[in-house]
Length: 201
Image (cartoon, rainbow, N blue to C red):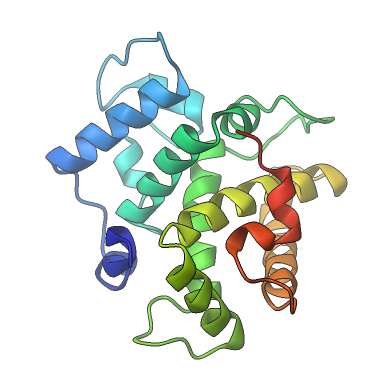
């Protein structure tokens, strides 16, 4: 099982405390997000360009902990085209008041932890049990599901012509679709999910 999933139970309820590892991960996320643009500091107005609420991104991680940062970093490195499209809101007819990219990412991590019942010693839901089997097949299943979810959420955002105040509604709709897809009979791998098609490297 991959390292950050082993940390979920301790991270889920804890506050995000910046350590050297976190600093390096934040710097790596910045480089992946804005290649060629120098980051002036870990506390900087530049972070707002990525959709953090203030100058210090560490204050936005309370919902998902370090796993949220790891998810964003994985997304940026493994599906850079999809990541950049979402970061820069390149697709579709966008709302005047869009969702903040990075904070949305933290909320997606939080939603997935709840949906899959990952804070429990063992899954108590059918969706959680199905996902555990997918995780045994691929120890990066949670990372990939995160990327799928972000793209699916954005797709629903556009379909619903949503604006900032609609974010919770869009997240709930995204969760319902994920649950339906995970329970399809022919899902043997995380890549078998119908919404995986939204991802582009």
